[in-house]
Image (tube, rainbow, N blue to C red; front, top):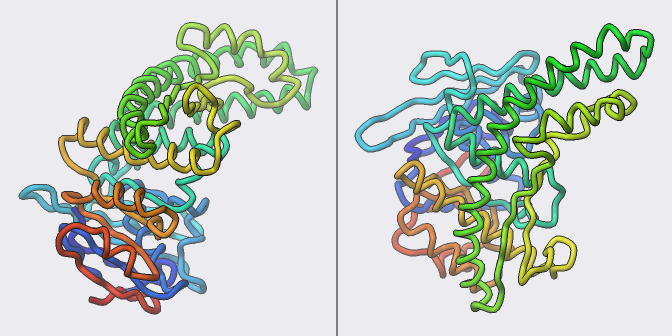
Length: 361
């Protein structure tokens, strides 16, 4: 659980906030900093934002750097995570005031599950969104997975740079094509490990989400989630070799785990292509709720749940289902109106009002 969050010049936030072990409700008008608060927690867990593509976007306008600090308690121990964002340099991350060299060392210390209105479009969105869904979950569960993913994308960038050179300078082709096979080996090695992990994750996700979806639909619908890899572990090298000529023409790598996807089917039909908006949202919610159970299985503990105004996007039955999942989980909920939230929440809650970047209560 997170006991305190301290911020300076992170978007519009300021000050120190104390969180309760159970449910924390952050309410207030729009544009006061509620989503920014959840982003600060997410940043301390993953080293990245769930919505910003560059660190400088999170720094208060007119400032050159920002700081976020989270004190995390796990059993009898306590750890301090510091994230230092810089406008014109790489971010710095420290654990218990000692800088860490690799961002992967941060994963697993504070595990979070984020729900936002955009997450309800997981099924409807493009493949990149579903790959990110898998990768964020697996990185939090396994530092090895994070390492393999980083190495894969590093090799992919190198291969793509080489392909662009070959596309623009055909005369260099004989000298550079041998180098292409070096990156092929790297992609196949790290990619094979990623495929294995994603396949296992998708299999367990399918088992759990199927039960959740059946409950949501009154046992009328059967949800199936299937991993759709671009290549297999066995044929990765061969497909890279066969696509080499095409890749040289295109200037980028056309096959690999960066092209993977998840397929969601309801009663045998692809819900992205043929499902109603309600079916798509229910399938997305089922997948996101399943994250909680998968984390509990692997880590023997519950994640911190971050709900960004998501209850207002759900009907009453889905609100009740989601609130029923948070009885023993530290949760931070943002909302503008309190009535729907308080009606469904179990037990006592801590109320905090967000105004002008300060959470009080």
